Length: 399
Image (cartoon, rainbow, N blue to C red; front, side, top):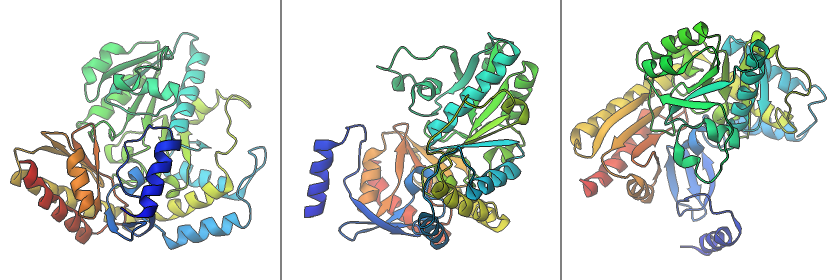
């Protein structure tokens, strides 16, 4: 351990709120799909800042756009217009097929905004139309409202009383949803692909049936694509892959390639319920973040880029399935699509993540026993082989 490591670990222990279970490396810089620590050790990054660094580290056009904008204007109030914000909103509206955009600073803020729009719209129809249904195993954020929307009770403990009006059903269980919904249902809010809960994709026909139920009860359908969006599924929006259009979609993570940003997009009908003063933000949609977002929005939606995600993602999943065949007692199931993939284990996964880290690769464990792979979207098949070779070296220890 270097002096810098010791210094950083000591300062963090003394001064930072102890809410992260950190891994014991101090990262310093990155290039492409690789990250480097302060001691010069190189790591193949298959976490990507948790699905954030979609263009990799130090992507030159992104660095140049951020630097250029920082030299002009970093921030201004949303009481004024900026060209970069208008451009980013126009691109998202065109890509989504929805009508109105709003920028915040994070995924939780995006989901808060979506909840507010849904409630305001529903109350215009019926003041008692307020129920929001989410899925068990979901994750929607850590603010009080988005924490309540998250269908994992252990996240709720110690933070009560929580806001009223939220109910939960199992993901992919259309019968449970049908039984829960009524004319008092304001919205159904789902991750198009569950990420933090263990990487679960929708069953065939599930999202279409959810859409039909929402239409039946005049409820809004909200897709949380904070992790699954921005090209990660092989489509710019994951809902495109399943042929279902929401009333509201939320984005964050990869939207600005690493610069903090969040956004929600909504139909004109729902947006019409909102008036000046109903929602707002100081920093959301600032020129720096929007300049970064415009680079992502000019790059990721390109057909060749998305085809690459599909191709490498299919290769990656096939190789993971091969590992499952090799270690059937350890790898229970391989799930996911594109470059949001998970390997469910029959034991906890954190020690495996640590051992892979020691061999020079950054991966992740979610839901206790699911190895999650959400790398930069620029990774190659050769880099997939490199990561899986390191994992293959580690796994026999746990069989």
